[in-house]
Image (tube, rainbow, N blue to C red; front, side, top):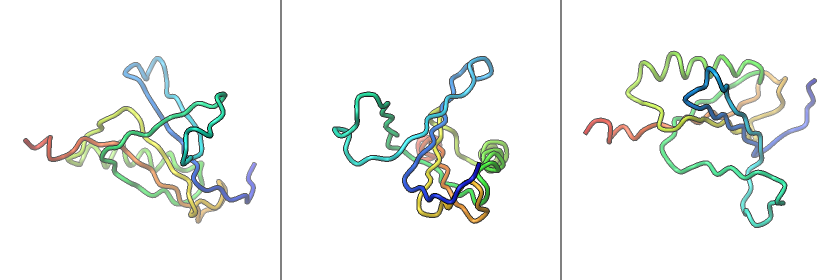
Length: 121
């Protein structure tokens, strides 16, 4: 079901383990906050670590984001000098995200990568 309610500062985090084929992937959906002291204890807090990230923009229907992820992991990364540094990624839904059913919606996909300078040494 689609609606036109705008969302800002929402994040989806995907995490996978080494046994992904057996254990699968884990997804967390949340909202960005400025201060952790205001978080009610019933909520889970995930802190995205500082580091180097590649940023990709997905434009279109949310259900088609799988094509963006497929491009990133099956085409771009294998043919680049980058490697994953952590087993997760996250997608941000900001002002450009209009709704899951709007073909003009944009979300940003962030992929943690190893610092290319350290790989070349």
